[in-house]
Image 1 (cartoon, rainbow, N blue to C red):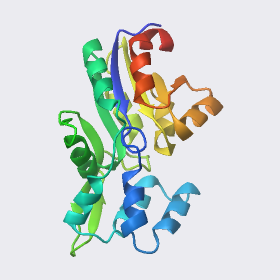
Image 2 (image 1 turned 60 degrees about the vertical axis):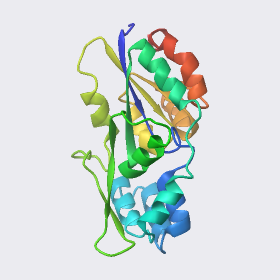
Image 3 (image 1 turned 120 degrees about the horizontal axis):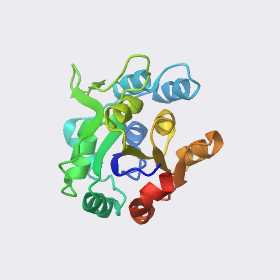
Image 4 (image 1 turned 45 degrees about the vertical axis):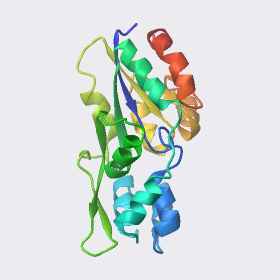
Length: 221
């Protein structure tokens, strides 16, 4: 079935941003214990929401250091052109991330990308200096993620002839790839989609997505 209209939902860390922001912060400013939490999440003993909330609580840095670190994070250089292509086709683009809203806003602002809807965890100051905490306004009942991407996909597809394209790269996109109409997948997500037989097209980055976007209806038919 050809679909006329599309909503495009993009992951941020490892997809738009070339590195995982929280991981890069933990590597430099995380107190002991964050790697054990990562292993608990990878083993399925805790969900990503619990993992990230407890990991963020282990960060030890002030706001100036945080901002300086974020200002060194690069995005896929083709992403702004991808947004222009999507706008020319009349497609709506949003960001769905299990990362931190503050980081996303600050990084995109350097590239004058300030009008994208963003669903992500909320970074907040902790009770003590150099401490931080994470809230999850886009969590959903029965989902262990901080941002339930499946719920975001379902709420973005209210019309019958309307498709939702997911663009992602990692574990936080696995469930969402089974809910989206089609997925542009890189990295671990591509391997997952291949293994599960999910409708997808492999990409290396947004330069590939630009080439594919005008043919999306035929690709997903």
